[in-house]
Image 1 (cartoon, rainbow, N blue to C red):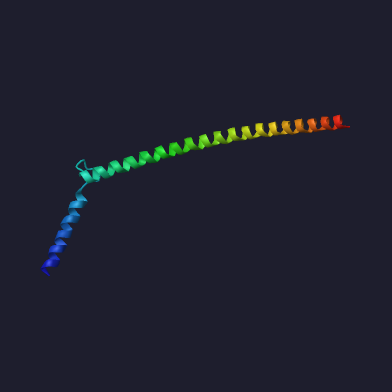
Image 2 (image 1 turned 180 degrees about the horizontal axis):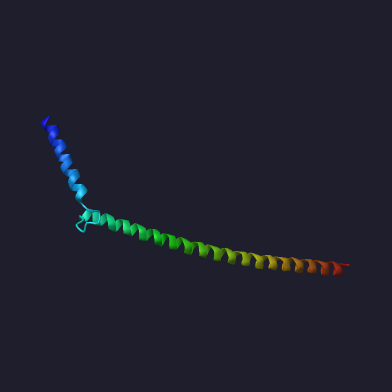
Length: 97
């Protein structure tokens, strides 16, 4: 019975002591300070990652546009080459006849 009373009394003292402390108390321990700094670093890292993602999206968009332009130019060149081949073949047939 005595040990139960001791545990109960100790629990009440701890609960009262922790309830009296303000969350914005300037007297924080080194572990809590380190935790806060880690949280801040994580937030900053998240922001930097988001910015990097936006830059990557923009670069990918620009690269896609450049690729489309290059594909169009290649298509035009292939079409021109095909026309030249057809013209050369026509001339060769005329010379043969």
